[in-house]
Amino acid sequence: MDKLQQHELLKKKSYAFQLLRRRHISTRVDTILVTLVWSVIFFFFGFRVFDKEDLLASVSFILSIAVNGVFVLCNFWSVNWNEFCAYAQLADDQIEKCTHVRVNVDNRKQNTIKRFIVPLIVRSVILENQAVNKAN
Figure (cartoon, rainbow, N blue to C red):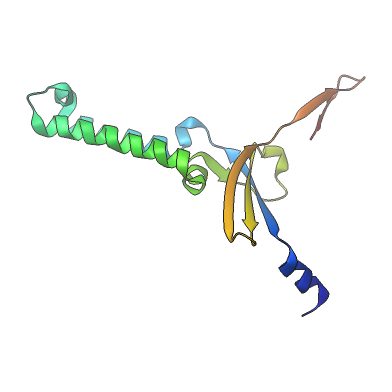
């Protein structure tokens, strides 16, 4: 092994970054899935889903609420699912379009990998000639 490989093995933590762009609410995967589930239920049952006498429609209504709850909890608990639903990956040269950054922290000492999605903070400075300079 050369010295660079030995140095990499001795490092306790490594970081990986991925540029992300937040999707519009209408193009998010979870929004589309919830809309699809509700559309199918409404197509088959219409306003009968609110009728307590129609058992199948009521159970479908309750299951659709449960599916929506599972999507919300998955977005909260899983960074991978949240990225899949709410963000689009960008190439490294598209930092102008970037709104968030995904950070993977690989802790070799504890043998854990932590994932985070953090917002990209952009500061703007107005120059003398009224031009806007975006500095990070």
